[in-house]
Structure formats: C-alpha cells, structure tokens
Image 1 (cartoon, helix red, strand yellow):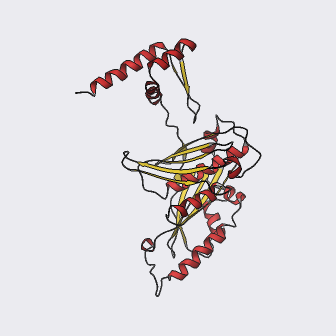
Image 2: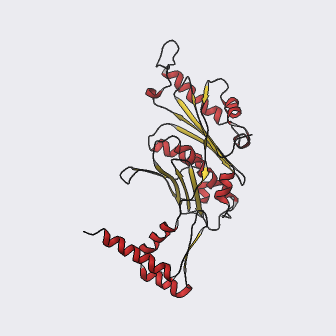
Image 3: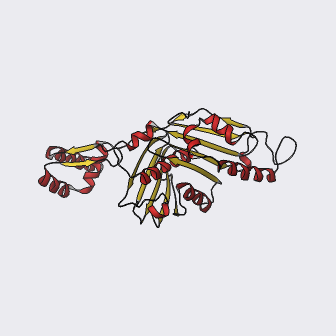
Length: 305
C-alpha cells in the first residue's frame, strides 16, 4: 500500500536520470475539506497539486512555487502553491463545467504559469506557456519543451480520496551519477543514454492510475524499472498548509482604503473576509477597522524621515 502524504526521490545509477513519486491522502482531503468541486474540477486540481509537489523537488529555492492555470473556459482558474518545505494549498474557480476531463474543454484558451519566488523579489522566476494538451501532464510536457528546460515527463492521477504521480527527468551529461562516463568500460555511451531515456518513458507510459494510487514506492519502481539499478532516498512529508492570517487580511483591507471599508461596515456592521483556500473567516468590526487604519498610518509615518 502506498504511504500517504509523502514525496520520494530516486535516481538511476547507470544513467543521468532522476525521478520523484508523490502520494497524497489526508493532505489532499484537508485541501478539499471546505470545497465542493465537481469531480472533473476536483481531479484536475488534484493532478495540479501533485505536479506542483513533483516540480518543487526538482528545484532549489527558499520560498514558494506556484502553478497557475488561467483560461477562458468554464474552469477559468486553478492555483496551487507549494513551499520549499512541501506545505501546499490549492483553489479552483469555475462555472457550469461540462462533463469532460479534457483541459481543452474545461479551460479553453489560456495559459499555464509556473512561478518560483526564492528569498526576495529579485530572485523570482516565471515561465508562461499557452495551454496545450488534454491533461496537466500534457501541458507540463509542452511547458518543459517550450522553455528549453531539462527533458521532463509526469504521470498524474487524482480522485476524491487521493492524488499521486510520477516524475522522470533527464539530467545534463555533467550531472551523471558517479562512475558513469561518456563511453568506455563501466560507462555508457550517448547513444545508450538516448535509448535508455526512450525506454524508461515507454515503460512509465504503461503505469495505470490504480498502480499509482495503490502500490508503494518500492513495488512500483520494481514493476516499472526492474532491469535498472534504481536508488531510492528517504521520503519527505507533504502536508496542507494555508498561509492566510489576520495580518495579511488587514493589509488587504488597508489597500482597499478606509472609505471602502467604512461603506461595508455601514451596510453590514462588520467586514468578513473568507480565505478561498481554507475557508477560514476573518471578521473586522468598526473598532477593529479604526485600529487597523491607525496602525497603518503610524507605520507610514514611522517610515518617513
């Protein structure tokens, strides 16, 4: 049985290939606890969540990775965020979705954006490509090809109970595992590497959604890559983590302005802001609003010399 809420890295000893496996159970349930998505939206979002976790493990960053899909179709937004510590949250927006699992039908014309924020704003990378493909796996394959990054393939699946996936990535020759040379005794040639890369992708294409959901990491890798020497590393926990806070909401209200906030207070007696990711409600009455804007004014004065 697959171990839930984990990410495990592995590499091929003989070839410059690496991979990751992700299995989500309770963490996925926590992300969906306060949402009532149609199955096709839920499963598409689940695949995006797994993809973000897999992608995060291929990058070195100290901050946040976000995967965003925007389209003109019924499912017009999917947003997944993953911290460098594998804390995740996700949300989707939709209207009158058709009975289809095809992203081209669900989202229509649109874009896929991958953003990595590491440290400060100066260390920000963003790649944007048109939506291309029926699935998140197809779209990300096109993303890697278009952005001329390392050859990368993903296999993803999700349902109401769990979400899981597999990533394979071909590394540059200089990043081959120790002892592997371009040619010669004990090494492999470039042609052998090309053949092996084609072979492992073809083998991975045979994996079923049931196998991704059910098999533990060792059993799955043995099933797929029995003829290869694959080294597994210690698994890392993946978990639901929402980054919302009363302070963040307060900053947003100050950005709206006192006049706008006062108009809401006059009509409803309080301002209520509900987080789209975790559904937590933040409420501000007139006293809270006065303190909020007074603190903002004090901070502004303190920053002027």
